[in-house]
Figure 1: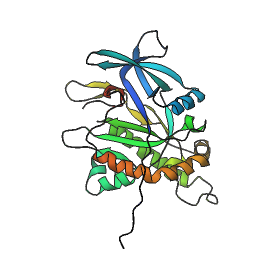
Figure 2 (figure 1 turned 90 degrees about the vertical axis):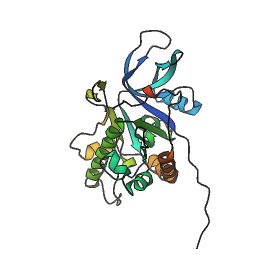
Figure 3 (figure 1 turned 135 degrees about the vertical axis):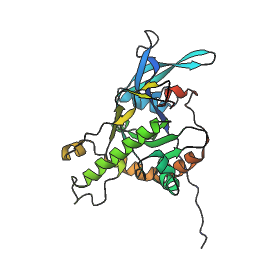
Figure 4 (figure 1 turned 180 degrees about the horizontal axis):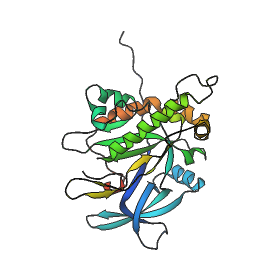
Length: 273
């Protein structure tokens, strides 16, 4: 039987970015000195509902200077700080490396897992994941954000997702099985992300980079899991979004290029090497 398709919808997602020290910013709007910026940010003024939710969540703004061919441009962003917590909507990595995630049938499985990943010939690798930001969830905002990285930072985000999988497996032994019989999935625990140790990347002329890493501790207990456990609204929203996220991940894998809202790749978590 051939069956009959139904139209599937991919919802838009706000762009969440991580500055690894290469960008400069100031936290006093309209005045003050620009200095190297490390942290997570979302551009202001692109979505009124998102702006309102970030304001309700008590998130302050900063100004980031973007370098342009004709000179610098200063853009307002919401400054989420050096660390965030996100409920990632994915079933998790299928391999321990970016190359392995794209080898053979793993490329298809990676997209089916809700992870956007591509590495075309002559291009740098790009990885993206979608989910809900915890501070926005707390004020009732349940729309997706998309966190994207490229080049060697894709390895770091993949490591963070693998570490989150480790914590989910540990949580299987810590939760109340009378109320949760299924394995703990990635969106059910908030993943803490933040800057790692300063490191040098590249060959010859190296670059000093502060990669993004998982902030989960090596050992977790029941109290840790309970404190980061998702509310029911997150679980329901994740299930609604899941099919669209898988479709988005498949399309992401086929795209040839991606840029930030203002075409400033330096604002992404990225570095050559």
